[in-house]
Amino acid sequence: MKTLMASLALILAATATPAIAGEAPVGNLPEPSEKIAADFRQQVDALYRMKEKAFAAQDADKIVEQFYSADAITFGPEGKPVIGREGFRADYKNVVKVADVKVEPISNHIGTDAAWEWVNFRAFPRDKAQKPFTFIMLFVFAKKDGKWISGGDAYTLGEFPIVQ
Image 1 (cartoon, rainbow, N blue to C red):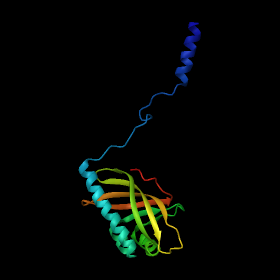
Image 2 (image 1 turned 90 degrees about the vertical axis):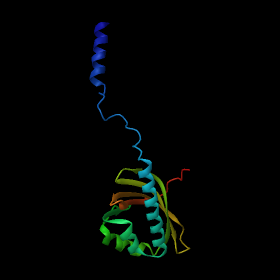
Image 3 (image 1 turned 180 degrees about the vertical axis):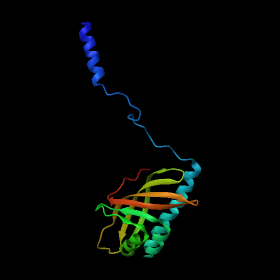
Image 4 (image 1 turned 180 degrees about the horizontal axis):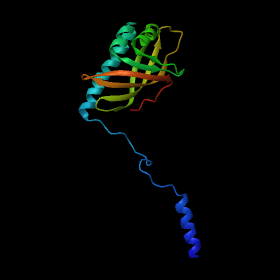
C-alpha cells in the first residue's frame, strides 16, 4: 500500500501544473487618483462635446486637428487602418456629412499619462429614411503638455448596455 501511495504521489506531482508567478488572475486594474480621473473626465468630455458639435457643423478639420494626435491610428471591422491626420481628414470630410453623433462613455482605465475608454458612439443619419445606429468604440488617449488627446480608436457596429 505504501508503494501504491508513493507511486500515486509521484504521478500527481509529475502531472500537476506548477504554480508559476503570473499565472494566477491579477484582478482589477489600479484606480487613478481622484485628481487624475477628474482631469481626464473633464478634458475628454470636452473633447467629445467638441466632436459632436463639429459633426453638426460638418467641420472635419476641427475634429482632426483638435481631437486626434498627428500620428493617430484608426480601424474598423474591415481591418484597414488609417494613419495620421491626412488619412483621418480624408475619411472625416465624408463622414461628417452623413450623421450627427453622440458619444457616451461606458468604461475606462486612466493612468498618469495614458488612458483608454470604451464608448457607445451613436450616429443619427441626416437622411431620415435611415435608422440611427451605434458603434462600439475604443479610444486611446495620451496626455501631452497637460492636455489629453486621442492617439486613435477602433470601432465596430454594436452597442454596450448603459450601466447606471
